[in-house]
Length: 250
Ligand SMILES: *Cc1c(COP(=O)(O)O)cnc(C)c1O
Image 1 (cartoon, protein in one colour):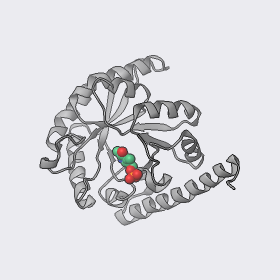
Image 2 (tube, helix red, strand yellow):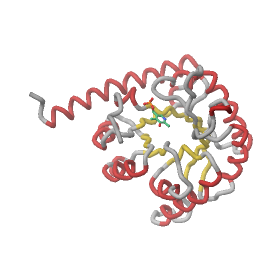
Image 3 (cartoon, rainbow, N blue to C red):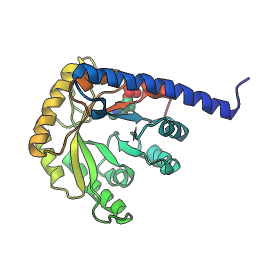
Image 4 (cartoon, helix red, strand yellow):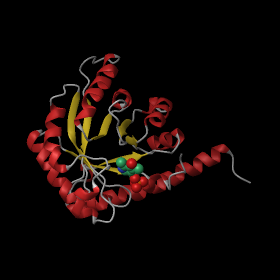
């Protein structure tokens, strides 16, 4: 016998509550170890492949920020969760001919890794702004995704080469519809994440030299959030540690 839908939802809520508690204390402990205040780090829960019902439960448990990596899935989920007041981050790959669609719904785009994306993002941000009260004044917060892979492995990976980041930062600054907030990266496999996040911290400092208000560092996932916080992460993107193993997807 399986339980009623109500008891299934209650069980899921308890499971998420428990896992969220573990992640929040990992973040708090990492902040203590790094001599940082816990309120310097925002938990962004990566809800990709999980249903809107989970997003709703997470909002009820105090989660303020969620991230998605597929446009269609995100649009559908956001529509179901429009009443929750969440901040929606986009962390997936961007194509220059689709970037404007993402910019219409995302509150933050974390995966800006080349100049070719900027006109589309700016257009999408403007289209959305036109329907809002602050018409024409909406600026879409953007993070530059940096590749931390060694150069010989960087081919085909997402993320800008660190050497190209200052020019990309200037290009984003030149787009009035975009607001440069900082950098984002995923630690490469097979390397100590701490070493990779130390390099990201240097890239972030280079961006702040060009754009002093671009203070966000989005780094750290379920398995390496401690190392990211030790190296200055302001946003950690955590999926499986909160939601469990991702369901199979096509
Ligand atoms: C899926 C994903 C995450 C979360 O990964 P977990 O290991 O499940 O915490 C973080 N960042 C990006 C860009 C992702 O695509």
